[in-house]
Amino acid sequence: MSQSSPTSSAQSPRRGCWTRLLIVVAIGFLLLVVGLIVWLFVSEGRGKAAWAAFKAEWEAKGEVFDWRASVPPELEEASNFATHPVVVQDQTGLNPALDLQQLPNVAGRGSRRDWTSGQTFSFRSLFRESARPEAEEEAIEIFDAFAAEREGLLAQLGEAARRPGCRFDFDYETDGFFGLHTTDVLTICREGSMILEGRGLSSLRSDRLDAAFEDWETIARLSRHMDQGPGLIHGLVSLVCSQNGLQILWEGLRTQQWEDSHLERAEALLTQFDFHGSAMRHFREERAGFIFILEECLIRRKQLPPVFRAPGSGFGGLEKMPKGWIYRNLVSYCGFMQRHLLAPRGELTDRIDYAGLRDAERELAGRRLIGGVLPNPHHLFVVMSMPSLEGSAGVILRGQAQIDLARLAVANERYRLRTGSHAENLSDLALDPLPLDPVTGGPYIYRFKDDGSPLIYSMGANREGDGGETAEDWRHGDWVWKYGDD
Image 1: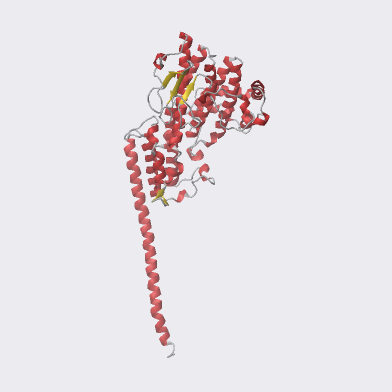
Image 2: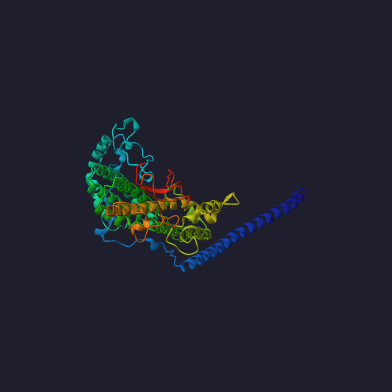
């Protein structure tokens, strides 16, 4: 007994030391947890206040942040493109039927030279070089047989296109905001416009003008419907359809085949296009979708739509993101949109200011990291969701310029039919209002080439003026309507 007492007395201070240390650690951990909770509450309060102040400032200027306002109004079924049987039926058999890859020995869809570079369409270019018909006439015959097999489907597509309105049903809570359930319809319109383009050009070369014009008109109407769909993807597919159709119009003007009755109808339809203005609506629809995701799903903790829960969507795990960060992301994302696109000069606009987008990519790059090292949580959604604004806007403005150039060319041809020669100046065309270059805001350039043919063009994205010379990359060269086959 006398030998164990010193050992016990020696261990007692050690136990007391460890006990005190554990108590200190426990208290420190508790303080850390409490501090984290307090920080989360304070962060959420400050973020909520910042978002409320941001909304109040812009709502006073007329901006609308309620995502529900982006849902288009209902349409009567008989006037709604989106409710036509060819649109709503099972698409699994329609997409392959329209796919040009079903054409025997068809080449891959690489870039081809077209009317934007002053080139007529070559049917031989549709085929692989190893199996390419020797003559253009033979290539046209093969294509015509391919199109004839799809006559019934093309007729239905033409009937649907002539319905006056378009309203795709989409539900933010089930479809997100990209209208992904319309992907098959987008494919049908894109593929269908390519076949209609070929058929229209074949008709034009056979001097069947009414048939050729009907195919161009169908493509133009399909393009209009796509442009009224939800989200930016519909606007971009609309541009593709429009460019396909303009090949028919361009070739008929180049060969001076169109009659005034055709041109009058073309002018009326071209006037309805406003890619410049509708793009702003599409960007606002994209913004409304992200506001829905952030406010409804991540702040109010409602379940994400299925498309955003899918693997690889980029949204997995964000449901646990602190609400304070989400509010800051709302301010960051919407502020970026206002500053570079929707209100570049501090006031709302319905036009794209392309020059104002030049700093957008630089600012976006600067928001990716903190100190060039750590991801910045306050700008997470800007980096995740923001497309290349400058690139998207540039493509849209080019599409608007192409429509404007077509309007000017049609009016110029009508002037020639009346007077026997093309106009000396664009003002002679008496278009009210006269289309303006969507990039510069000034008039389009109009001059005569050495061979006496007119040339109408925009200075393009580089705003430098390349004398009417085009380039394969839309960012370079001018955007041109040529009257001759280069």
